[in-house]
Length: 254
Picture 1: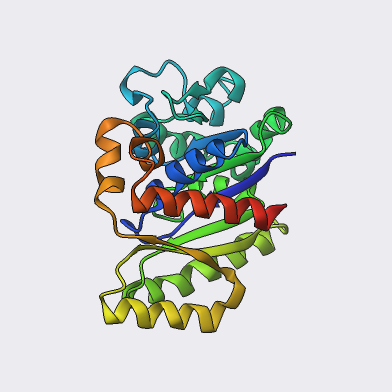
Picture 2 (picture 1 turned 120 degrees about the vertical axis):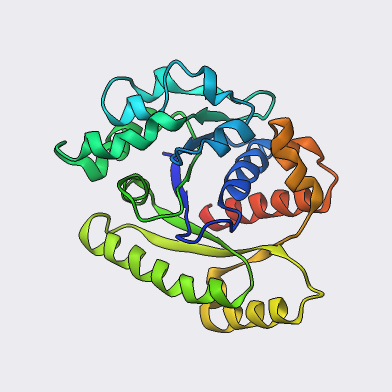
């Protein structure tokens, strides 16, 4: 049975897609069968996994409106070791089309039943908003991974996100919980970053992942080559951190 996790944060630019793509690559590197689902109409996770969003015949859009199965729409990432349920700008229209659908919040969950035995991990890269797409991701998932920068505004947004997850748990998905907070783009030379990191550990305890992802140029360069950082430069500090994170995830859900 696949373990399904959303990578979510209502704040943009916090490393959700970088985390989704590199965690998928790290888990694949560790011998896990992985499906990465791109639920963001920008399609950055699709492109960052070596799949051209401009050349898609089928995408997650077709799956959500019942025009294709996940098996038919899945693409194999180019040299990355995991499968991708890709997306492109068409997905932006899905929310409007789904308004009149019965069970619109659980369209993705229903579709995932067909591939439950095929994968060990399913990772869902959510858009930076509480939209019908994000709600579909949260209703499908067993847990949420929250990437966040150690800065003041990130702390403020975190409380909103925690409340959102609680509401989804109460109303749609009782098994949903926060798996953990992942500190990303971390620079130990910045005093505020260290202070916020310590605050998180005090307040959330073991909900904060031990792994810390450093700010790293190679991770930032990798998407322009259509690759996760873990594949682009495995020896870089960022890639090594994501491999450690993959190990920690396997350990947590074992």
